[in-house]
Image (cartoon, rainbow, N blue to C red; front, side, top):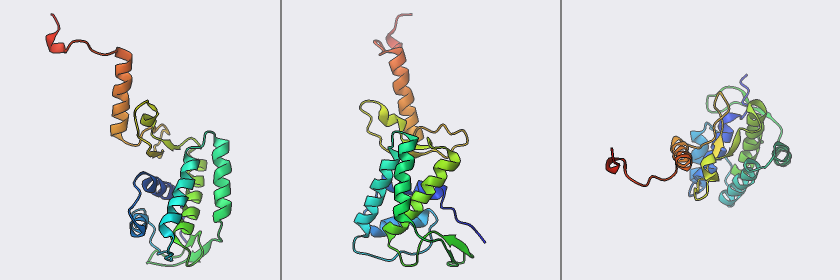
Length: 188
């Protein structure tokens, strides 16, 4: 039997939705497929708004100022999203556990999957390995992307190489000061 712990992929899915919100419900479901979820979801008229609320709730956990506060909020979400695990065999995957009841809405399933996945990520990799891009901490930099640190060393601070490079250039310029003359025009 395969045990599906809803770990890393669930947190990466949440970050993907937070950083690049789909236009409609079908876009959200397509994103779940990209991250490995194969079962369908019961459609409701409020799926889009309800799922946005799940992601907004998760972003509060991302932005928590202490590990204790993060754990407190995450525990509350998991208690609200609790369902009984059940054995399922679908889509040729073989028997495995799902932490969802049959016929649940998209938002309900994602709340359970993302909260459990986030808890697994934080407890196995470290409570500090979830946050916002460090480039956005600089004045005038508007990057608010989520960083899910899945690196071996646990030091990922930026959402992309582009943000890391931009911040490195900014730090370098702050150390060296502004140039007053182009290099080509300086006396030899």
